[in-house]
Length: 310
Image (cartoon, rainbow, N blue to C red; front, side, top):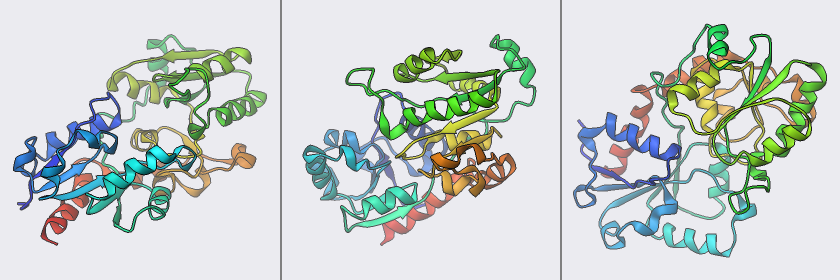
């Protein structure tokens, strides 16, 4: 039995953090509250909504804050001021990747705890019959499918590439594979994919685009793939690394976010050796087991228990 009561702020953005929020409360109700007044720990899991929290309440509570990632190319004066206001109230920062920890140390002297998220294998799992899956989505069984389910376009104009996610790199990688594979096609999901859709159309590469889907459908889309590619320059996760690992989906990635925690060294690439990168399904699946619910909650619960007593 844990001695703390924790309150998480809710982003309400229909993004991964909303899912993490819901999974936490579903599985840890005995030590959690949705009433800020009842909590002795406040977890700012979405720091961009920090302004919605009563600052008077924070003064009398322990405060932990998750920083998902820091992109210094976008860390302008406004972002610096926002961070300084946040930093005044935070006692402990949580990050999930080595890169974010390194970046965060440049702008705060507060304690930082590095631990990846949990993952739910009831939502994300391997589906062995790829033939039936492709039949369901009306995709030829003999096609080589590369997938990407992350935003690639800036919201300000819905056409400029979101360079932190590396869509320009992804196009380059797809074209390299296209030179070797005549039957290559691309599977996309998620919003703000305009940049990639335009480029793929320009290069006459067939795309199967599923913009907004539920988790059940997204898990099926993962299992359709022959390869998932993370081409990002900066990442907090991405969540696709967790999901591909637990669902036994072949994946390669740049050395961003949690890639070095879950992927084999052979699966992590630089742009000059991307074709040499090799997915290692069994390695990723074995390593990700420690994050599977309920095991994935234990490091958080133990850390929070020690935190409230310190």
